[in-house]
Amino acid sequence: MRSGARDETLMRAALAEAAAAAGTEDVPVGALVVDASGVVIGTGRNEREARHDPTGHAEIVALREAATRVGSWRLDGCALVVTLEPCVMCAGAILASRVERVVFGAWDEKAGAAGSVVDVLRERRLPHRVEVVAGVLAAEAKAQLRDFFAGRR
Image (cartoon, rainbow, N blue to C red; front, top):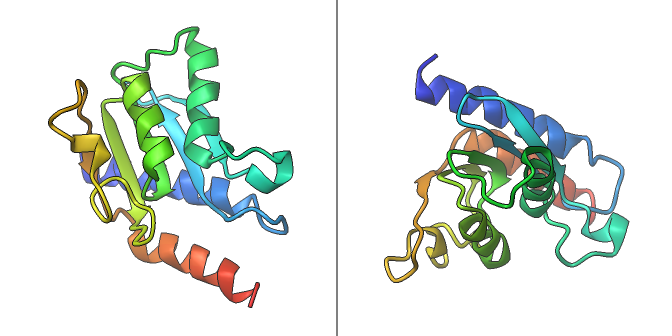
């Protein structure tokens, strides 16, 4: 399977993870970590409201699960797929975990740290940089977020 098709398949799984948050107070963002062989080793969705946890972003949840599953904080060779561009906190966790590749759907024009507001993931002064693939199924990811916020107004 070519990289673009694989990214879309994985993004659909991340979108399904985000959709699982329907009916909760949490913003529907879904993430998954995939190892070098393409196996999903961690999944997560936003759970800040559900767990009263300011670090409960989908990326952090997925990274924690993946690290536990492999028995190491080092996620060398792994990719993170997430429906919304990571924020600064999540970008820091991605760098700390040594994830090699990030694929995201919708841009976050307010708090994105993978190229929209700042670009932490590819900052040359930091010791680790990440390959970033942006805009995979962006319309679907953006619609999911738009629908959530429209229901709150």
